[in-house]
Length: 97
Image 1 (cartoon, one colour):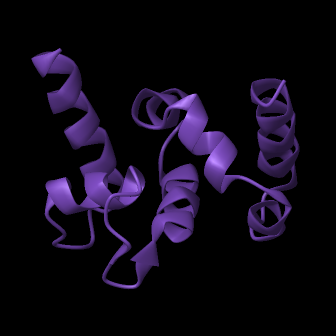
Image 2 (image 1 turned 180 degrees about the vertical axis):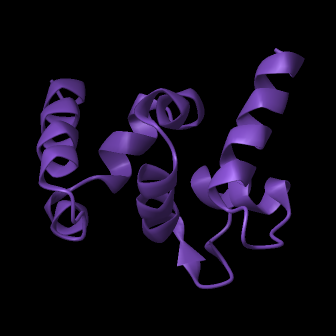
């Protein structure tokens, strides 16, 4: 469990390599415990991670419940990559069943 947490911290920090955000605060926003960090709210945090991480790293730190809470039609409109948008839409539909 400790190794998994360390890996999650490394992954989220790698998506924000150009900011000096504390990893604990990034995780708090990701989990919905903190409203925002800098100009990143939870939705913008997800968008940033989807743009900077590969899918396998993303799903290591974002659980299915959080995906279904954040990823909706409004969120999908902000995803610029059409393949990613289509894939996210499919994944969230499956998770909501």
